[in-house]
Length: 338
Image (tube, rainbow, N blue to C red):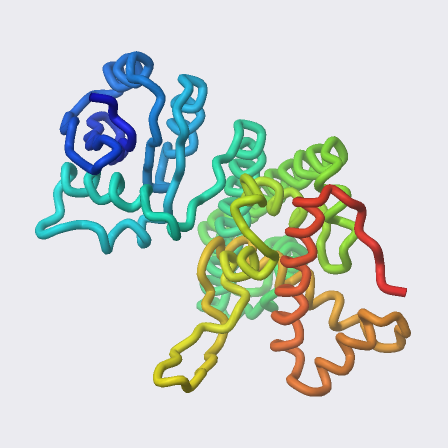
């Protein structure tokens, strides 16, 4: 009998498989290691494969697609309700097999290698940014213990720290100066790594037509455009722009019942990094909208006066996400407001 649907519980070394036929009868319950998994799937007739969108899922999806299978990835939180009784690897694989066959299940777009390269670049840059913030906060905190107060901005510390190290009358010992000099060198090193990452992002941006189309939207620059292209593997998985903005956590969270609609703050689901980029880009547009007469700027000004700065920024980020989905799906250039 032919396996129609196969659920695979992914791991680093051991993989659990659960397969059923067209009527849902179990035909396969198996555990394989990495080496045997590739060989087993290559010899298996083409079928529908379901997996959770976790570490390594996009790699395995590409491998199985090349072997002729249809592959679909699902968010793990959407698979969890299908787990019966106790949790174990076989039950997880069975739940994945059941969830992937549901007609209303929502799936994750599969990324190609180029998209994963860009996303890896953004993750590395984000790590450098966090490390620099850590170094700045640590340096400011330690300086305060010596009675030396520096502003919060990175530029202020970058400018003041050499002056503090050269000042021989501020009470720092030779040993403490050596420690702060090491922190200053680490700060400069992180600045250089961030600058190098930005140059790589701009190089990717110039080579991508999609990124350049997205960057025409007010509030979306090279960094946000490349992050969008990398994160949104296949825009066709979203039926409309609102689904993409909901995937990014930019729509209100609901707590409705009994016919009464209750809307709360934004849900904050999805990719926090990408949502932050969109909101910060929208903030720059909202802050510079005064005095402009185009339709989009007038809408932003009226919205800011009605609901305030922060809500206006989130609303514009929501709009930009929907516009970005339309540009990615249609491939048409962005038409600015008259």
